[in-house]
Structures are given as structure tokens and as C-alpha cells.
Length: 297
Length: 249
Image 1 (tube, chains in turn orange, red):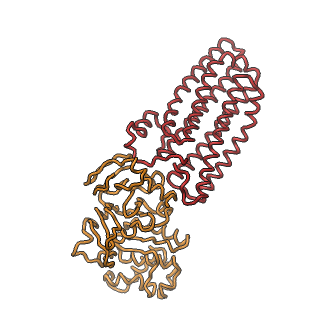
Image 2 (cartoon, rainbow over the protein chains, first blue to last red):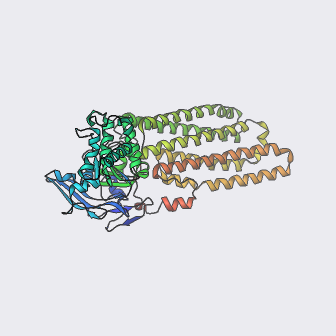
Image 3 (tube, helix red, strand yellow):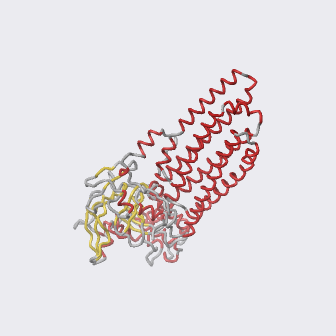
């Protein structure tokens, strides 16, 4: 199996269709040798929110991502799984240009948000990040009050005309993040005084306050206990009605629970992407199978 | 399917243990069926009693394996081929237990002296049907033991032969009943035995379907054999980009 620049789309009935690219049917013998080859499953979608084609990312000389083509659909929750160092976080960070801040990082390929080039010279990264919000692994509230944490982005982007409107946005965001009832009497206490799970929900409230279109989550629950995790997962499901969500997670059960589609990354390549249901019951690539059944190692 | 190679050795052992227990249960159920048929054809009430008394063993194995599967689901959250293994096992043991019940029914009839003449009259037909059923059962258990989807789909094709033989036997028995109404009772009982054999064949078919599910990840229940062959067993295997399980050494 060659590693040429092709991506093959294979649907659940094993009918392969080539989308804008060329490729041949997967070779079973090669698969058992654990070569990665073309992405199996359904990487490309019609009418997607984000289109990524032939993404290559380098840190200095080291290539972190090899020729990934992947679409993220509207109102979809896409889970990205894979062992540490497989490039899933790097890929996620490309989607709102978080890698811009790393001087040795070089990004190639095309990244389109609603058909608009994310890496276009005229694209303002700050505006872009207001459309593509991000929630990080460790809750990182600003050292400000709960109210100001949520209001910060709203003020920055001038999204509220007056104080009353700002109050309303803050309350609505906290409500949507499922935090309002817990903090409504303490809105002017510091955000850092909340518990870990509450802080993470505060960060989510801060993200949705500026009404983004896409929310990127980089292991949002890895520092949280099971109850806080369940609350966040519930929230992800609710948020997907309004937003497109891409989530990187180390918990395969979490990916299985919250996502519509799951993408498996391995050594900087996209091995398989398909409906979550089929990835967790009948993965097509042996590497995916090994990883989700705990045979990786 | 590599049952081994999990990062967790204990998990390996748990899955291996489940599989071994199913093989053991399959072996016992097969032996029960063979003995029941033997007891019926050879008029061996002693053997028939033994079969009837061993059914409890089959039942308790079903319960034990079921519990083990529940434990693995709770503790390990199996996915992909591991999940399919556990699900297939839970279904398989239900069918195995039913086969055990059918064997027990045959054994209970085999203890009745009144059946003797009718069984003798029907001896070759009964022996023929039994052989087909027992072969099918053996093949389906082999398919599970080797995780051999090809053998499973071949074995699926046996059902129509079994049904035909059962029908022929039934027709013969009806003729007997019409000729000599005093034999209706015993003829009916022989027919029940034949019916049990036919049911064992049906359960063996189910086992094959679970093997195909386990190996290919496709649910082929309630599908025609032609459909299964055409869809999931294309002549050219290269067209199936799917993780083909293979047995650990």
C-alpha cells in the first residue's frame, strides 16, 4: 500500500468512492502488517462546517501530521482518539491557528471554515478564534471574578451594547454551561475559587459567551472526577444542537458516549474515521481495533 | 481474533477463560445429544437416564458463563471484537442450553418401552436425520472453536436438508398412524423426538450466525443464505477491508 496523496472513502457497505482523489481498495494483507496507508472509513462529508485537505504539520524538522484530509460536519461532535503523540491535539490546534504561537511550527494544506481559508493572510486570528472557540485540558479561568471571566470575550469583541445586555449574556452562558444555579450568588467571587469541574464549566461558559460556531475541546475532562465529567459530557451533547464540536479525548468510553463520528490517529496519520457506532463495534483497520480494545503497546 | 495481546494480562485470561468455558459447554452439549440419540436408537434406558440427569450440568454452565460475561462487561467495557465475542457468547450459551433441553427431551422418550417398535420401524430414517443433525452441531461448534466464518456459512446450508428429512419422517409416521391407530401414541412420541432433533439443527444454525457476527461483524440473522453468501462472502476476499480475526496460538 503506497502512501501517496490519496484518500479513500469507504462507507459502511464497503462501497468505496473516491472524492476528488484517487486510491485503490485496501489491501488486507498489508493491513495485517499494520501499515497505515489511506484513511479508511468516511473522512469526507458533503456540506461540512470544516474542510481539511492534505494537512501536513511540522515542528522544525519533525513532521507531526502526515497528509490528513478530514471534514467536520455541521452540528456534529467529532471525537479524535489515539495514543499520546499521535498528532490529534496538533490537528485540533490547527483548526483555530493555536499553532501560530509556536515559532517552529509550520502548517501546510488547506483548512476551510465554511469555505473560507483559515490560513488566509487577511484572516484575523483573534476573530477566527471567536468563531472557533477552545476549551483546554486544564481549566484555565482568568484571575478575575466569575462574572468577568464570562464577560471578558463579550467586552473584547463588543458584543454587548450595555450593562443589561452583558448581564443577560453572562447569565445565559452560565445557564447553558449548567453552572448558573451553583454560582448565581457568587458571581463576583474569583473564578479560581471554584472546584475543578465548575472551573471547566466556567471556561465552557466563557467560550460560548461569544457565540462561536465551532468549539474545540482538548481533553476537557481529563482533570475532572466522574460526576463533573458526566456533567460536561451532558453539556457537550446539548451544545451540539447549536455548535459544531471537535473533541480530543483519551477516554475511549467518552468518545463512544458523546460523539457522532470518531477519528483514530496514529503516528501523525489519520487511520480511520467513521460513525462512532461502527468504530466501536466493527472497526475496519487493525490499528483501530487494537487501540480501542486495549491491545496497543 | 487475538484473545491475547491486551495490555492487561488479566483481561486476556478472562476472555480466554470465557471462550474455554463455552468450548467445554459445547462439548458437553454435543455429547448429551449424541448419547440421547444413541439411547433412543439402541433402546438404552440406562444411557437415557444419564443424559436426563446431566442436563443440570449444562444449565449451571450457562449460568456461570453468563455471570462471567456480565462481570467482564462491567469491569472491562469491551469494545470491537472483544465486545462481539462477549455478545456472541451470551447468545451462544442460550442456544447451547436449549440444545441440552432438546437432548433431555429425547432422552426422556427413549426411556419409554412403548416406543420400541415404532423406533425400529423408523430406524434408518431416524438414524439418517440424527446423523445430519449431529454433524451440523459438530460443524457449528468447530466453526466457533476455530472462529471460522467460512465453515459457519457452509454449515448454515445444512438446515434445509434437515428440514426435508424431518418432513419425510413425519409423513412416514402419519402413514403408520393411519395404518394402525393403536400405534398413534408411540408414533406421535417418535415424531416429537424427530422434532427435537430438528430443533437442535435450528439452534446449531443460530450458533453459526453468531460466529459470522463475531468474525465478520455482520448480523446475518433472518437473512437468506444466498443473501449472506453474496453480501458477506464474496469470491474475491480482497474486497473486504475488515479486521479479520485470527486465533491466538
